[in-house]
Length: 294
Image 1: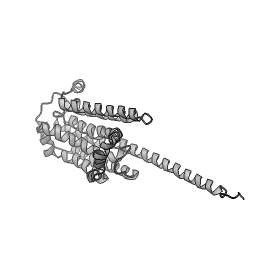
Image 2: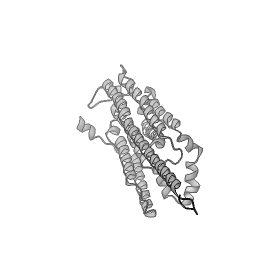
Image 3: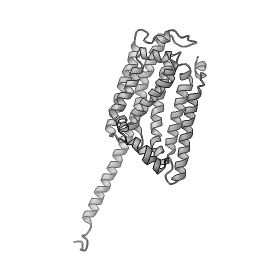
Image 4: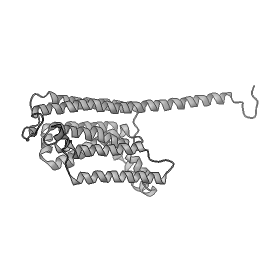
């Protein structure tokens, strides 16, 4: 069973072309930055995060989760988790907005990028409450049984509406929390930590309710042929457990990242205060100009 599951891959030209185009565009932009600003090369850690994020999307859409998402609920749930809780945060950590600013010409930045980044829409989207509501709303709303089954029964909606919506909502949510250099709003570290902590709660509860449901909540999976694996109700319970556990585990990972940045920011602030105090003490002991020390 495990071998059959792991060997399941699908070929879909549009996602392949889109993901490869993203990789080519990002890598070419990093090369341009390194060429134009050799003293400030693009961080390799950012590039690694981007490639890892794209690879995670590739696995979620074209790998086993994508191959079996219309057969097993747990495969579909794994796909959602990979797209929202792994791929999207990694893409945010790769800082693509800053990369676009550093590679664009001055005219292009002034005419196109700056108006977009400073627009009212950008301000709304980077508001922490908007991102939280958007992300949790998409996750909760898409798992309403009628909506969930509708997407499964309409492959176009599932592939070209649901998947982009998951990624977009996660990017909007994680951007003000994890972006190394926010373009618009700079959230306080305490608010970032609170946002991640509270995000885990509704996802964990949703997973628990799916797990604890005594009856099959998603009729689509009752009528598909299962070549192997658990029955429909056991499959639903496994899916709920996956959402429940991943919300806690992956949420804790990003909570730790936010907490580590908070500690680093406090350390930098402490160093600035120490330097300012040292300068004040030194200035107090300097003799007056034109006079002599007593």
